[in-house]
Amino acid sequence: MGFYTDALTNVLALGPLTAMVGSTLLGVLIGALPGLNPVMAIALLLPLTYSMDPLVALAMVAGIYNGSMYGGAIPAILLRIPGTPASIATTFDGFPMADRGEASKALKVACWSSAIGGIASAIALMTMGPLLARLTLFFGPAEYFWIAIFGMASVGVMVGSDAVKGLLAAVLGLLIGTMGIDNLSGQARFTFDQTWLLGGLDLIVVLVGLYALPPVLQLAEKCDLKGLSSAQLKLADAPFAPGEVRGLIPTWLRSSGIGIGVGILPGAGGNIAAFLSYNAVRNASDDPESFGKGNPQGVAAAECGNNADNAASMIPALSLGIPGNVVAALVLSALTIHGLQPGPQLFHQNPTLVGGFMMEMLITSLLIFALGGAVATRVFAQFQRLPGVLLVPAILILMCVGVYVINGRIVDLWVMLAAGLAGYFLEKVDVPLAPIILGMILGPMAEQSVRRALLISRGDATELFTRPLSATLAIMTFLVIVWPAVKALRRRRRLRAG
Image (cartoon, rainbow, N blue to C red):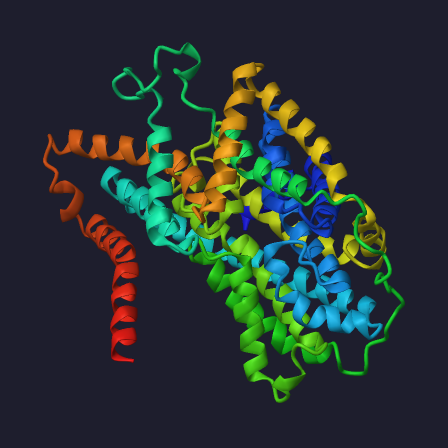
């Protein structure tokens, strides 16, 4: 308890508390604007956090993440336009409710469900994260090596529709991570006689380019000059029937469990959690035919499931350095730019900071009750009238300013542009971007760990496989890589048999 008591004292200081309130409101606004998403917002935010206290920076990440996941429900319910990918399932019953004049009720259900899912997820993080971190006390360099390889392999395989493309993306990130001075030998690698490359490509510059520029280009493609119609913004109050809220409790419990389980799996994401929760509640319902026609249970399941994924995705990220989703990878990046090493040692070296971030995930979920209710919802719903094309120059300016202030170098703007164009075309051919960033983060960890392990064993490579934990992790990595091929073979056999 002392661990969290100290963390709570730090979190409730003026700086982190102000950051949580402001960023939660900002997150709701970002989610409410179709075309914007939490990944792009956090990617834009990270360069601006260099001079901030790490706890304040993480508070802003937590607020934007939790706030935007709820905010995505606003256009999903009012206009059948998902504000975030995770709010697609919310449209199934949210929009029919709004169409029959129950938009206010649907938004209240979404708000409560988002908050409850986020709270359950944060509690899971606070209980399971430290337990998993204690297990890492038994890890040596060989285990760290396999954790890094397992993280890159699992995310590369599970993110996207093609495992081969995901693994190639992870390898690309791994290669980018080798640029610069080798930490063990001091030799310059792949710098092409450019002094600005001696420190390698800046992670945040690449990250902003990969994640912030492609959505901006997609917004520009649409050339939305009229904005979204406000004709459907019917926000008149619709009362709840007696016992209707009480009837949502089983849905919240079931969806929270599903969302937490999905969040722990690397590469799954809130959209999968939302769909699984929605299907589970519909299958368990006595009236499954009412789903898709305006059943509040459907809204509750989707929103609770996708928000229960939020903090749960941080469990493997903070404990093992393996992010459960893209935002978790950005959190690892935020820790890196503040001089902290993501992964198993984080709990032992910076327990107050980690505990503080866990508390921030919990508090920002609670703030959704207070800030994401009727007032914020009514205000931010009006921003949907803003033409999307007006957002493009504003976001580009923020990107350029944020990247330039990192190192004060014009060359970083060119790197950002190159990364953004690469990310834009990679998305066009369905190559996932998350494994690239993960390769840049975990690649150096894998390289240094394997070299340390070989130095300790005097060049005996069997040390990587003979220890029980390292052997287990090696087998898990092998299974993760081979499993997609096994599934493909089974599918071919079924097609031939059919």
